[in-house]
Length: 212
Image (tube, rainbow, N blue to C red):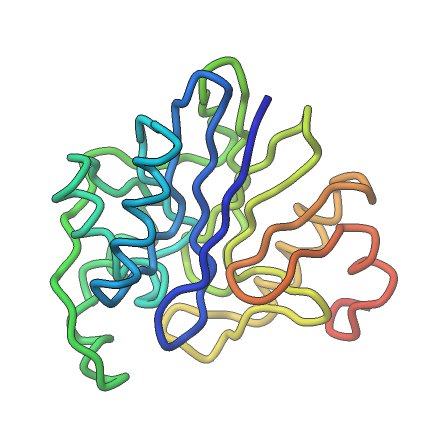
């Protein structure tokens, strides 16, 4: 069985996810922990559950989703994995932090990258990697077909969509990604968003005013 724990971190109220199975193997998605208190909350949960973090996966590399990458590396030895198109975004992390008036340690750089169509295994559970650019050049969604959920980052929100005014963003590309990639999934697929509450593909297909 798969279990998902969410945390809301940093001034941008970003959702960090820990996905784990019955054998206590875990993936960390988009570590946004910024303060020492937030880092301890993540670390305490992992310790109390007896989890063994295996991979650090990024839906994309905007500053609010990578603030905790150094913390995860220092505590668990995991390097971030991201689509190669978002590597320049990750490399500009310090510049982005200055723009938003926050300070942070630079994230360690990846040694391997996520590809569209790649299947990542958490124990016996498959996560299909879906390339959904537009919010950022290399946005990736992680889809578990068996349990009918997708960890979608900032592509699609409950009643909204990701912003496209940051470097590398493109509105037409984002809309195409949503309609052709995420909306290709079944209506009952749950979408765990990078900010705010979760939703479903069907609900957004029917009601989202930005994608009608």
